[in-house]
Length: 173
Image (cartoon, rainbow, N blue to C red; front, top):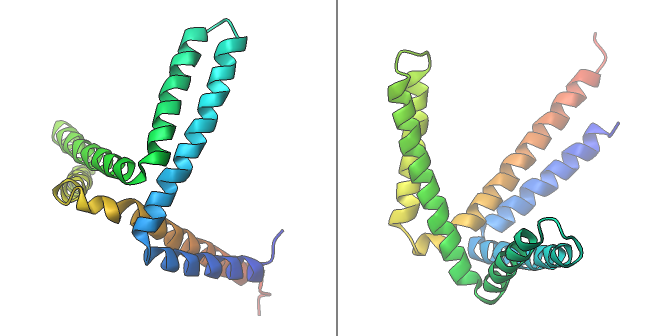
């Protein structure tokens, strides 16, 4: 069992790193795309080997290797373009997801929680619209900001969990 103090210190370190990364969203986003490109390149090699040595699904593995390899090369050689394409995809998915959630809320209007479904759909649709409206400029900050904010919330969660576990270990008066 780990010490709540150690968990708390690690949580604070994660919080600090998250806030530092928040200051460099483009660098973080482009780096994430670049690293993902190398990972896809490695996955392409694995699929290529599978396609050569394994007869079942040979063509599927070779096709997958080709797609992974092409995407990996694109992401490594053109990280800004890849970041723009990824941001466009995120915006379109959020907008579509929001629209579908609104349709679902209207279809299930007699069920409990309809207002929350509508709220959820509106938030997703508005976020998607904002991303698309600001595109391609939003590409320079969106992915990095999302990663940094996730790290900040993860740090807060770890900090609260470590503080909560410290409270449970205190003797009762």
